[in-house]
Amino acid sequence: MPSTLAERLSVVVPSATLAINARAQELRAKGVDVISFGAGEPDFDTPSNIRDAGIAAINAGRTRYTAVSGIAELRSAIAERSARERGVPTAPANVVVTVGAKGALFNLALALFEAGDEVIVPTPCWVSYPEQVRLMGATPVFVPSTLERGWKLDPADLAKALSPRTKAVILCTPSNPTGAAYTPAELAALADVLRKSDCWIVSDEIYGSLVYDGFEHRSLLSIAPDLASRTVIIDGVSKTFAMTGWRVGWSISPVPLAKAMEMVQSQGATHTATPAQWAALEALRSPALEFEQMRALFQLRRDRLVHGLRALPGLRCAMPEGAFYAFCDVSAWIGRETASGKVLTDDTAIAAWLLDEAHVAVVPGSAFAAPGHMRLSYAVSVEHIDKALERIGRAYASLR
Ligand SMILES: Cc1ncc(COP(=O)(O)O)c(C=O)c1O
Image 1 (tube, rainbow, N blue to C red):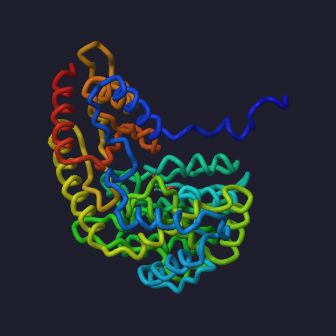
Image 2: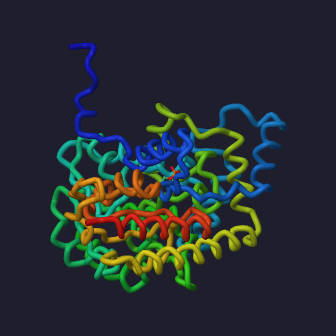
Image 3: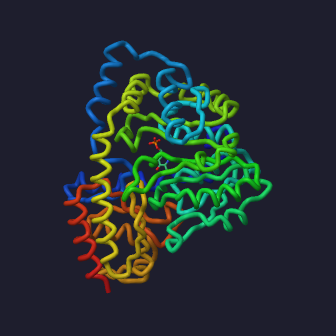
């Protein structure tokens, strides 16, 4: 039947976070004052020096194709920064600049995963990992962690999940959706297990700069440089520099894989937008001051939100080390009845009820393979956090 869609799409679902945002926007368009904790992006503007660099690039005629892997200046800056921060020699040849970090993950999935492969995905996990794996015909193998363990993958559980079919393990530190970030000792324990296998290790460090209370983000690559020949770093400017719409990310990998991913990209996106690459270069050269202000504000919001959520009856929430998400156990509210007589059967029902009743948008945990929870992005002002907590408290008080 030539007019049907490809069979591979039957196993993939659209991004749930985008769906919540769309619903919140719909309500807003009707004049409802919705406070949204749904967004996976900073609420700050891209700093002015970076915006100016993008404009200057356009005006200087930097509007044509570049090399598929990105402009040489940006690849060098990425390699230098990574070598400095991760303490592992890195050359521009290891770097492929991509259409956001998601583009890097997509190149990687196309280059590595196929039917018969298993890919270990610790949960709660970012929505796109399992879907990209499935899209390639491979199988995500979920390994759950718990709030009691600070949402960190247990090395013993990882050891049990590894099989001869394991093609890759995807780690995300700091994590979306939990904000949990691994300490050097925790990474070393995971590396010990990974040494017993020969699979790829994907380390998504897109939130690496957003850590709080003096926590130091470390890469698995720094802790276990002996695994460099099968480790891929995913990173980008989207979150650190409030540049989500510019669509610049990158992978750092062994050269043969970088070449394979470049080939994949050459047949798809070609490269990310040329002015955006120049703007990303400016971002990497930016003084830290503006970023530090953003980080300090995120920390303040995190504290306010997590303490506020913990004060609500039955809710449990770990204090995240990084990113800008609070991940909250709402299972105590499941089974309660709303004022209009609807039973809150699961986390999705709770999210829908909060949106309708409290006009507060959250993402249900089941979107992250962790039912019974909700994710709140604190890319929201302190005033709105306070207002939303009050609204959630009032909605809770109306439950039967
Ligand atoms: C864990 C994680 N990795 C990758 C991405 C993709 O980032 P980008 O917007 O640069 O594609 C996101 C965005 O939400 C994310 O949360």
